[in-house]
Image 1 (cartoon, rainbow, N blue to C red):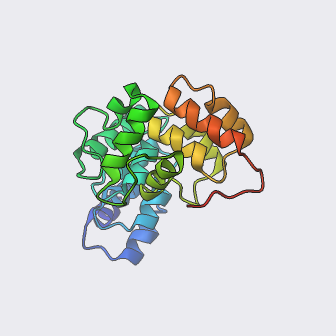
Image 2: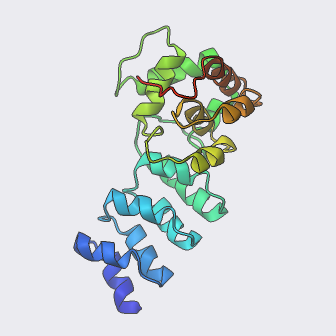
Image 3: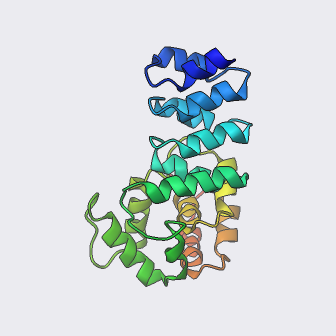
Length: 213
C-alpha cells in the first residue's frame, strides 16, 4: 500500500496509472490521487463523489480542483471536507475577491439589487453585463462560474438547495434540471434575494423547458 500511495501522489505519475489507482480499494491510495496536482479534472470529479470523506477532502484541498467543484464540496455533509473546500476557495485568486472566512459570506446580507450589482462588477473580467443587471444576467454569471453543468444531478441540486452558500441556492433556481417543487421551496427561502429569483423562475416554469442563455 505504501508503494501505491507514493505512486498515486507523485506528480510525475502518468494519467493512465492515476486512473487505475483512483479505483484502488485502499482509501489512502485514492486520497493520493485526489490530492495529486496533476490529476485530471475528470478524475477529480469522480473522486469528489467517493464514499470516503478522507478521499473527498483530498479533492477539496487540491489547489488544481476547479472552483465549481470546490463550491459543490463546500456543501459536503462532512465538516472537514467543507472546511478544506472553503479554505481552498478563499486562497484561490478568482473572480470574486472577498476577504472573509467564507468567500461568499458577505453576500448573505445584501439586498437583491445590491447582490445584482456585486455580481455585475465581480464578473466583469469574464463577461460584460449591463449596468441595469437582470435576473437573466445573474444566470449568465452563475453559468460562467461552472455551476450549471449538465452532469449535476437532481440529487445534487437537492443538496445544494440547503447549502449555506447563497450562490449554490441561486444556481439551483437556474439549473434546467430543477423541479417545480424545489423552486417552490426556494421561493420561501429566508434570503430574500434567493426567494425573489426562485419566485421569478417559478412563475415561468415549464416542465419541458431548458433555460438557455
